[in-house]
Image (cartoon, rainbow over all chains, first blue to last red; front, side, top):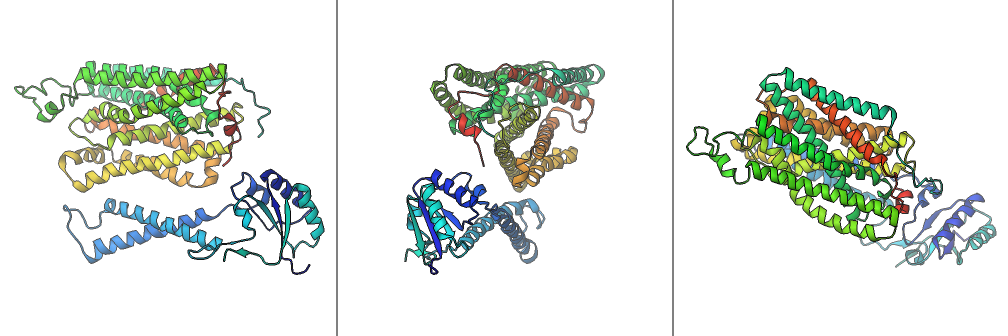
Length: 178
Length: 407
């Protein structure tokens, strides 16, 4: 019993799963996470998940891009190699703007992808880790941390009452595709 | 909120303070125009006509972009907007009137004060005349009075016909239900968008760009399209927020405002993009026949030039970037008003340098009065149109999606 790390309730229907979440919450059982094969409306609010802060990250990456682009063009066009183009001053700001804009977008896009990889532990070439393989296919899975919630029989009963087709006791956190 | 307590026959009552104020606005406008024509000299007459053109153009653009909004929603089969469609429909319903006003202003300007004097003066196309202008003569196949007025009438007429059609189909849907009206709206919206996309640039070239007929820019049409579209979105947002505050349309939630805020944010950036694309190419190529446009604006309208960018780019970008700001009705209302005023500034510095002699432009009774007058006219006509039918298209097939809209 003590080797069990996670209890997984596997549902065949999203509404039953939402019902299961309510049941667990009513009984003060903390939910570790929920895995579903498709996005479900309102589930973030129900689980109390905080809003993603990727927009702040995006802003920081974007502004870095703007500054890098400005520094690059300023160094090239004003300091290192002045070229007379149509008699304009070397430091002609309107000319800088397209490149500053493009590098802002580039830094922002790459930065957000990398942030996403870092926060979800997905890196190219790494085998994805999942708790239940069928959560990527046709099952809606509620995961409960077995160490934090002692009353395993109660959890089992609640999940089954809500309509869980199967309750699993996992001794490892993740099943890998490896 | 749930959908069980929605009154599907709720109607807007156009009475009381709003009605009085809009009529007062119209009277102020009429007084300002009369003042401009009676009290002023020739320069003042030019200025008054330029103002009338500005506001008539703005009025028509906001209304026809309301139709464009309807068409976009139908073609995209958008669900979120199904419960707010009556507001753009009221704007579309006003388009025929706006079109008539615009054509009347243009004709009056053309025949009495020669508003389009850059291409419509005596002898410009006659090789033997001392006023002969070879550039204008080369453009006279396109820029001559009958063809010019014909284009205006045809474009505005076609937009008006489609506007009335969308409105009629939606009302039929209210009575008959079913998918017939929706399918017809979809088909007509596809046709309308193709026509609209190709003709609005030409419409902008005619109405505004030909005020300075020697100069041309192929970006100008899209620049104007962006301006009219974003100002129309801001208008829709303002009407919705004020209606919700007045106790109507309680089914509008913050997610609807969020969507409109995203639209205003995105298309303000699009406006800046086309504005800048036009500016940068002219700045970079540095050819005298092109730079004259920005030379005039930088020489005589420097304040307006920068105010334009501040109001139409900086304000929406900085104030609407945050998610919560788009969802807060007070902030969205504020930005929408700024954007709406900003596009007045935008049109002001598009139209004035071509229509008024250099250095004789101004900002005073005529400008403010005309603007107030048209705002009053818009409020009066759109709200009257809105009050005629229920505020919700109750048989719209995607209505439930809109009522449960959540972002």
